[in-house]
Length: 85
Image 1 (cartoon, helix red, strand yellow):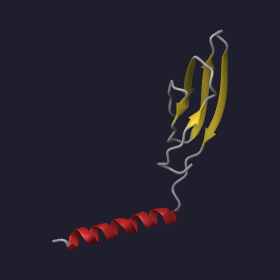
Image 2 (spheres, rainbow, N blue to C red):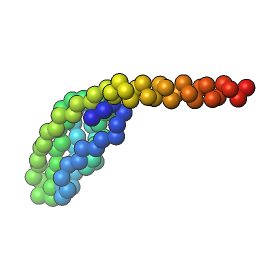
Image 3 (tube, rainbow, N blue to C red):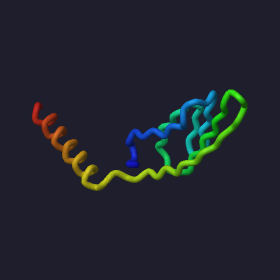
């Protein structure tokens, strides 16, 4: 996933509790990680059975062309703003 992108990782339905462990933590079924690392979710059902699953998330820097496009747009906005004075 690209840095600053909103990506969700979601555990299966049907459990009473969820616990995400890793670089970031949470207690809901879904986690929105923003840091690379290994995430482990622990779930418990109504019978007390516990399950675990693991996912590796890798966060990449945005592509150079996206960064350049954003910088060019910012420069255009500054030029428009300055020309109003």
